[in-house]
Image (cartoon, rainbow, N blue to C red; front, side):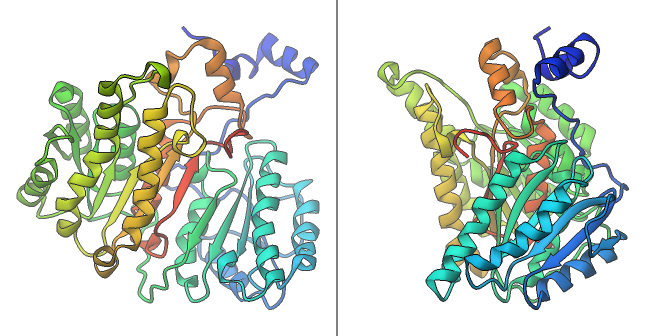
Length: 445
């Protein structure tokens, strides 16, 4: 069995050594459990200026059955600060004055959430500087937090406040356990966002296509979407037919054996979805491969195979999937931190995943997609504990686990929970986002 630093320092001699030497000890993260409270404690809500958005936050929190605090206390489990009215850098004092004392008494696995306006919509230079400064402050707070706590930013455009509830609920809950120092953009003014009747079943009645669903992160995505109420169409290559059928049968969905690089892959998915389920609402492009080599030794086959599976196949499939997906549907792409920060020996993989990010933002703005009310977002995982990472050399694996603000690797379910959030109809105000699920990696952040 491979050595696991996190388990070693969690008890016994390992714990004693870590304490004596001042070594990091990962905290067990608070992950989502159906039926559990949104957050285990009171939420402190504060604002600069009139605080209209703060009023909305209070109403959301109270509706969820959570207590709202107006002053820091020993029982605060989260802090939400509304900075939508700031005009210049001097106004950032509100953030410091609110968060600094609360950090001293905040419960483990707490949440810091700062809500502001997009910097690009600022009307003065001073306002733009202050709005962008919020992001730097929150990222820095994320690196100071301990006990499995996280800090994130929400940029909500003027008029798009109706889309705030889904993001707020996601960030306060255990669904966002491994998401840290990210910026969520709520910039689509949607007047008729429908909230789910049951927040434990936000995908009730939906049909979701998941590629690469036979194992690992793909199987976890299928499981989370099914748990949240969706019917699953599990897609993977014929060679994975056995485990693919097991996933589909276990979740009460259907399996489709398919090579995503085939020219007619998209058409076959549409045909299967219409024949077996009457259509589909969600597409998760998760299928992917790696063929690592230093660029100096990279042959054409390794290069083209990775780009074909990870990027070109999605572009081809979308030609059939986008026209066929039901209005108001959701497309979620799986990118990677390698597409943001790069990775040694993975120029082909990094190219494909950076391409996925570029495709996500462009498709989200495409006129035909916007006309159908389809959201398009991406998730970029960091170090996630899978069979593949278990085979990584010891030193590299432990660095990958520890080089983030939460001092541990993520789990496949962490990626799946973020994908699930993007697939909610309540998240209709969120599109064109790429969110890293990486625990705030110290490098490439």
